[in-house]
Image (cartoon, rainbow, N blue to C red; front, top):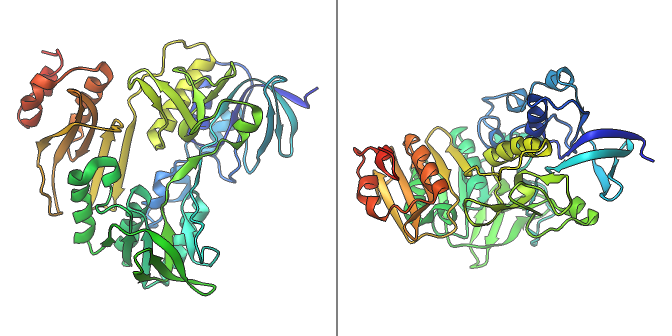
Amino acid sequence: MADREVDFLLIGGGMAAAHCAAELRKRGAEGSVLVVGREPEPPYERPPLSKEYMRGEAERSDAYVHEPSWYAENDVELLTGRNVLGLDLEARTAKVQGEGEVGFGKALLGTGARVNILRLDGAEQDGIHYLRAFKNSDEIAEEAEDADHVVLVGGSYIACEVAASLTAKGKRCTCVMLEDVALSNSFGEEAGRYFHEVLRSHAVELIGGEAVEAFLGEGRVAGVRTKSGREVEGDLVVVGSGVHPETMLAERAGLEVENGIICDERLESSVEGVFAAGDVCSYDSVIHGRRLRVEHWDVAFQQGRYAGAAMLGETEPYREVPYFFSDLADWASLEYVGPANAWDEIVWRGDSPPFDGGDAEFSAWYLKDGKVAGCLAVGASEDLAHARRLLADGTDITSAQAKIADPDSDLDEVGGRA
């Protein structure tokens, strides 16, 4: 017998859970809603941690999904700083830290992701940081105040964003990365070169094609050494080595797991009435025709909302095209829909390679078998809605490539619109 009962148990305490709760109430759900999160803060958005919050341009509360008062006002119970220690999906109970056993009707797992830790020589030293929560952002910003040189490990979103933010605050930064060109793993070398040169033009040093072998120092980190023997000295190190889905709770409960919690096209797991959303959700995408797991703010937002609807009986598949964004200080911003895991060619609209940094406006259309697989926009947000439509519809645009490449053309005319 459970100590208490709720109708909807939302586990994770992040974006997905907060927006699921809002959708439940928006759609008139009258049952009890309990949100449980392991962090001490109410649900918040993570993008500011490497950007405006780290630079001291925003407060913590600016990142909150809802005002703290929203939860009580909407009869949503919020437990912060608590872990869900176990799930019995047959009995429909959860063991919640400090609450005993909580029975539930339907559940959402929005347990997010954990950072990949580099288990290298010297990794136990002070001054090595990973970014996932407010506390990490605070510690990086505080230590950077007294640092002459910051070393970033990685060439993707986190490392590049943090390097831009700290450089904008007057710090000297160096990125050591496996890829030769920053952000090329996501966008290819041609598009990545634009962001690479933007970073370089603002004095961020970029060392490509190097794998970190060890952290230098004795007790306090003093830099990194690469496998080629190159040593890069620094007063602190920020590692952006990616994340992995937090599936331990799901695995112990017996849910099907493979690179995330396996879900169908309605984001429902292998157990009826138990859904997943956000970084941990590996779902059957009816748009992409493949299983997809995406780590980004907008996906947690959209999937959280959809899961709330699905809990109340929505049967239409989840059909949102994933959207991404990133800012490098106020130097450059990107938006992207996709994701394209492979492409045959790129069609450029607006400016095109080679890039040498500075201002540019373009969209890069990633095509696979004549169809849109993804689209990257810099200063061309209006192109994304068209790319999203064509991707979702699976439109063959082979005969329309010249029109797409012409910045004066009307993209409404592509794909059957007149």
